[in-house]
Structure formats: C-alpha cells, structure tokens
Amino acid sequence: MLKRIFLFAVMMHTVNVISYGIVSNDTIKFIDGQDLTIIGKFHSEKNYARFPAKYENTLRPEVWDLGQHSAGISIRFRTNSPFIDVKWTVKRNAMMDHMPSTGIKGVDLYALINGKWKYINTGRVQGQRNEFMLFRDAGNSSREYLLNLPLYDGADTVLIGVSSESEITIPRENLLTAKKPVVYYGTSIAQGGCASRPGLLFTNIISRNIDRPIINLGFSGNGTMDLSVGDAMCETDAALYVIDCLPNMKTELVYDRAIELVQKLHRERPEVPVLFVEAFPYTNGFTLIPASVNSKKNSEFKRAYDTLKKAGIKNLYYRKGDDLIGYDYEGAVDGVHPNDIGMLRIAEALTPVIKKLVK
Image (cartoon, rainbow, N blue to C red; front, top):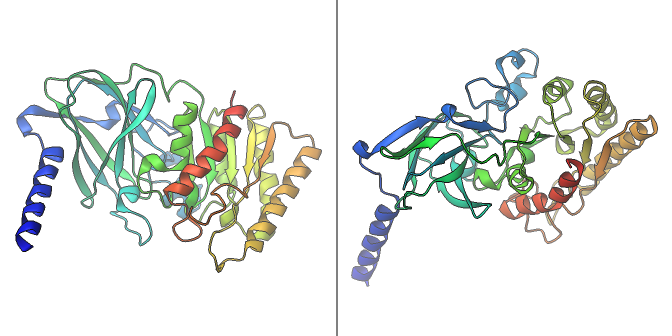
C-alpha cells in the first residue's frame, strides 16, 4: 500500500513539472506590463493603483490605502508565444482567513478564443514575489490575452514572459478598450471579497459580458458614499455610475449621503446615468446581522431615489437586491461576502441591467 502511494506521488509530481515547469532563461524575454495596455484605471500614472497621487490628501486615509489595491485592473496584450510566464510582486503580501491567496494577490489569464474570453490559468502565489508558468506548448498562433491583477493587494511590478523568438504587442482587437467605462462604487464585495481568483470578481465578469472596462471603486469596509470619491467618479467620462455602498453605511446616513452624491454627479456629469443597487440579504441561517438592518438601509436608499426623481433628476435607476446571490444560502463564504457562486450570480443579475443602461 505504501509503495502504491509513493508511486502515485511521484506521478503527480511529474505531471506538475510537465505542465508548469519553467522554460530555461535563454529562451524567454520579459516585458513590463506598463508597456502594454492597462484597463480598469481612470488615470494614466505608471502604476497599478486605482487613484492617482493627487488624491492622497483629499480621500480618507483608509480609502487611499485601499485604492492602492489593484482590484479591477487588467493588462491587455497580444502575442504568438507558445508559452506565457508571469512574474509579479505585490506591495503588502496580504493574507486573510476567509479568502484564497489566489484572489487576494494572485493573477489569472484569459485568451480570446472564437470571439469569447476563455479562462486559461491562475498564477499561484508564493508570497510577495511570484513567478508562474501559465501555459506551455500552445503553438505560435497570435492571440489576444487578458491578465487580471490582484484584488486585495496592490500589484507593484508585473512582467510577462514570452519566447525570445516571439512578438508581444499591445492588442490589435479593441475588445474591452474601445468603449466608455462603467464606474462601480461599492464595498468589500465590489472589491472582490471573496473571489477565488481575480477574473471571478463580479465586476470583471460583467466587464467581459458587456465588452466594456469597469473602473472598480470598491473599498473594503469603506464604501460610504464619500464626496471625495465622487470627485474621482466625475473625473471619468463614464457610460454609467453605479452606487452599491449600503453594506458599509450607517442607516441614518444613507438618505442624505445618497442625495448629496447624486446631486454632485448630476451637476458635473448630467448626461451619465446613475444606478442604485440595493444590499442583498445576508445568508447566515442563524443571522449574525439581522436582515432588518439591510432592509432599513434599502428603504432609506429607495426614499432618496424617490426624492431625487421628484426633484427632476433624470437618468437615475434602481435595482433591488433581494435576488443578487440567490435564495439557497450557497452564495457566500461567511454569510456576507460572496464566494464564486455568489459572484457569478451577482454578475448574471446585473449584466442585463447595466447592458441596457450603457447602450
């Protein structure tokens, strides 16, 4: 019996080496991700942060710090390399007890196959400095790729390794790059807690569904309808603003802050529609946070919406949250933060609404 176990272990090790082994250094060249096409940012600084430096002194410190996380930021490129290796470093080597490290500080790769984005592989995490061979032996056909960056840590450097005899360029297809972005302002859920890998963050799924970049302004514990974040939203020539902040809000602040934020957006970008998204009921069977808490927040949100509509604010829309992660209690890691099932369900629920509003 022990001999069989040993042989099985050797076979498994061999498979892993064949599938993911590192190509020798003399046949690989690395390109800085900053020399390719970056999507999911509203600024042009040479980094993977969600805010440019000028916001450091205007945002709350917590929001600025979370804005250094690279949630929703991706790299688009084209190559005919038979393999892709990726080296990346993260700023803080963050860890959490309810979210996989591949979601916190990993990367994942998609390829454009027959006009659709197909998941290829996930870069496994070793720590603050990482390297992973995403695939090998794929021939020399030119393909378009999408590399999604970490959700709960900040990508510091990203190097994409290809065959030294291959080309790697900015994308030729304009998918995910040609249209105005959606700006999504939310909480830890919108930032990506607790997707198992970056491509399964619901805003990244929606982005692929609607072929449009999404500027992710989800901030863990700090999505509180700040007017300072509104300044950043207004800086973006957006197709749609989404406000999904209720899980982080105090009930008594929801009404006033929603009105103030929408008035600001409407005053500076009156042509851009705004979508309110309610909080969904938490899925704990024996609820730690009473459902009535979110219910009261939703009621205040709807009251603000009704007030704004009566005041003549146009292009304002409302999406209830009851069904966002389903009714079977399977959509969350901890009753609050979606797992991959929950992320997919949110994306499926919001995609048709967003697609309609950005036409």
